[in-house]
Length: 322
Image (tube, rainbow, N blue to C red; front, side, top):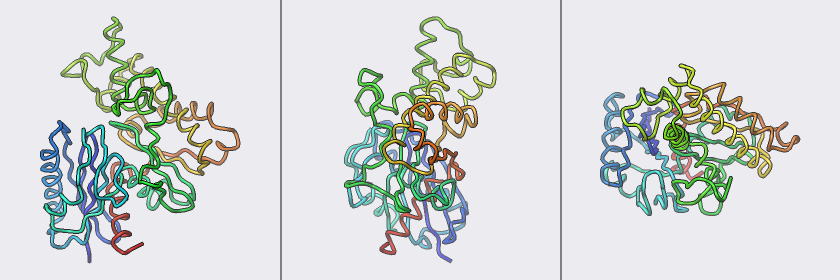
């Protein structure tokens, strides 16, 4: 039996998993990314978390047929170089070559949200659709596209960057440096900024007692805890973010006319039905009636595993020349 390794590199976490050739997850390991500007330190954490997953599976690196890596940001057309990953602070990092040297195995690089979308399309909530839009909300907002049953990357692997579509040219500064991107309204970084801005204006929130460092990013589990305690400020910030995401998805729906929209990522997973209802509310405002009738919005069913599963599926296709 052959084995494969999937690595999902995100702005907040690195997830590595060992899978068999039937797509069953045998073991996983996770570490914080801690993208502090040092590429070497992030690479070291990728190696460490991968080795941990191998130990848990009792599979040696020599038995790994290929390694699929989902990485953020636009990649070069050959899938070797991460051109720009704002949440990591990376530019033109030759990630595939570096990891080949570290592991001595075939490495296939894909965009992380392309991988997540493909994983959901093949094995998750996107199954049965023909034209699927995947959107994953967490540290940032990424998107992936499937047209006529095939992953669509565009002319230079940059298709699907829904997070950097414009909502308001005078809006908040996005991590990419531009103003008013959809990501600047929907990631938990935005939700955190909105809450702290209101706290600075004198409004009360239980968040101040739940975090160690006031003013910093508030992770989704803490936001959820505040919501469960009835914090109206946090509820409003999260619901506003969800409605804006729905507006962005409605615009995308008018453009590409999908039959399925799969939503995943840490924010979606934490807030569940309440969040999804607000997304639908914004979506129904913006999407044409005919387009929204065709597009079913669903939550990702593979949850955190979508990225590693999709990365391996894409890697095996590349290895087999498909």
